[in-house]
Amino acid sequence: FVTPGVPADTAELIALDRAHVWHPYASMTDPTPAYPVVGASGVRLQFADGREVVDGMSSWWAAIHGYRHPVLDAAARDQLDRMSHVMFGGLTHPGAIGLAQRLVAITGEGMEHVFFSDSGSVGVEVAIKMALQYWRGRGEPRQRLLTVRGGYHGDTFATMAVCDPVGGMHHLFTGVLPEHLFAPRPPDGYDAPLDEAWVAATADLLARHAGEVAAVIVEPTVQGAGGMRFHSPACVRALRELCDAHGVLLILDEIATGFGRTGAWFAHLAADVVPDILCVGKAMTGGYLSMAATLCTPAVAASVCSGEAGALMHGPTYMANPLAAAVACANLDLLATGAWREQVAGIEAGLRAGLAAADGLPKVADVRVLGAIGVIETVGPVDVRAVTEAALAHGVWLRPFSNLIYTMPPYVTGAADVTRIAAAMVAGARANAGV
Ligand code: PLP
Image (cartoon, rainbow, N blue to C red; front, side, top):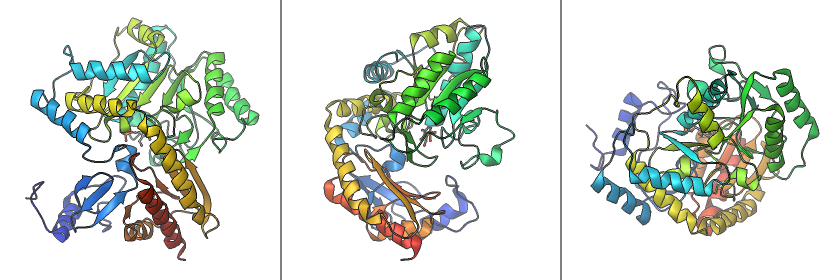
């Protein structure tokens, strides 16, 4: 058997992987290989074949401080010496308490209570359950959610039902998912003026379904896996106003945008909006361990707990895992020094400069940058293999999908490596167009 830490031949690893291991959104019969990684340090991944590449993805947007950060490593080791896990029903531990305190302190007004879970999708499931139980607690059961087209909130059944129903990843399941309401996609552009027609269409949907809608759920300012599109903070404010006007809860999903990715601590703080329920995950543990959290206001918690159940009906086995909580506390303490602001601003400037070369290339529909997010949108689906190989030839790991060649690098990526990532993306766009 292959054992972690024991050297193995790359070709053999690839063959065994293909034989047994199913990868995300991948076919078990397609021979496209996954690249074996045997180590990572700083912003570099070490492939089994000896190549070292800059990670342009920060492991799906989570490893914001890069890999093997000494502070995060030490936090994990220290906690391992005390206790790697303990059940959370009826027991608690300092890591969970400290992390909840930190999250409450940094997420702004209103967010007082924290429910931990083990992935972003489950964090959103919990938010949905909170909203439904809130209305049960008030004695007015409501079961529908309203969201916007182009969104992505996870891979579980409740979350798939609020992902984009047509262009998204889950349209195969339409018909077996709960039916929710979809407002138009918010108008493109972080700096775009508020489009009153969009507000009116969303308001109309809420008015037509008055009394049915439990909550509006949306990713504030950046739609991630649904298309890497940016919309203005004014859209988020408009949704808050509509929720207030119609007496509906607002769930903000900051699993991708939270912890500095857009250049603000949280997108809802930049928009000056207080949600009723907030989902965070991904970068919360600096990419070390899987953990998410769902926060809410005292009013939401009070109503959830006053219903017939008297409690929120959820409890994952690995809830509030002490290892993850310890690393998350250390990660948030690292972020509290504030260095990420300059780092993200530097990445934004570097990506703007480097990606300008993609403007006007064949098959390039749009180039956009916000914070530590850089996107080349292509005309039609990308040739994933060609783009990946072109980026690797530049010493960069990218994982394009749909019609997107994008990067969300670790915040600690230095200027030269940001330039390298941008050049790799432009090379990917060229390879995609065959020029
Ligand atoms: N919500 C948003 C906005 C996301 O970007 C993601 C993941 O990409 C999720 C939810 C689901 O998180 P996870 O993949 O940890 O289940």
